[in-house]
Length: 163
Length: 132
Image 1 (cartoon, rainbow over the protein chains, first blue to last red):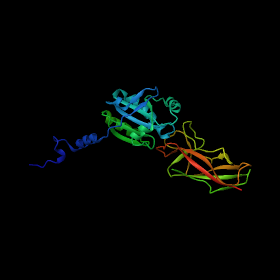
Image 2 (image 1 turned 180 degrees about the vertical axis):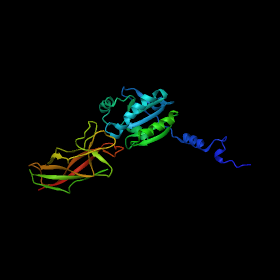
Image 3 (image 1 turned 135 degrees about the horizontal axis):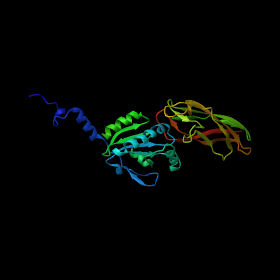
Image 4 (image 1 turned 60 degrees about the vertical axis):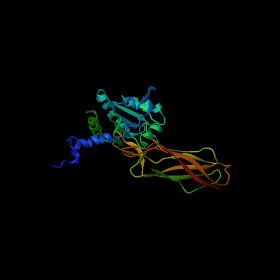
């Protein structure tokens, strides 16, 4: 009788898929929050359960953030009908007074929420910007990016999540 | 991130003035926006001093900034990097009492690398003086 590797014990499932499944199980739940958007409406992350969410912590004074934002505008436009949403969390101390003009200048087409210390703390501190979290449809964190990364990287990861 | 090196002490006469150099040193790999950033949204470097008291700071002068190209900006960014010197002139009021003291101020800055930014910070700056 041949020795069946432990990795194949589960109904003959190859190791790669088992690893992927394990990775999925190990994903941490993204902390829920309650913040206000630019229209004054209360928004919770849990409102987006069932959608893939790109949660982006940013600020108007952050140069690298300004590079990413047009990408995110394009992602929102291209993928919103596939159950995807970008949520921008602005970390400007000056509040909407500076954020609204920035939103107009960059023609931001996704929801922007005003962040605070509580939500930053919930997400591990957010010591630098940009910091982005890719969240799967089950509300779990798939990937975290601290600092500017390439557009291609986001596209590849979104493809994986939206598939 | 940014270290401030004020002079040890500045000697002033009542009603007199003296130039003071304040060295600022940034950690390698970081830059701060200059006092005249090229974009309205960027937070400028700003050093301000208390105006009450026997000694006041008259005019703060910043060095000429570098115009650097970074991948995150379509146009050059007006920045300071490494070590640079900010200058001010201390003036003792005619009625200032003889003795030692320190002029307090605040330095506000915002630092980034070429891929990420730290939140704006405000730090205290103290300029010791002696009025003779």
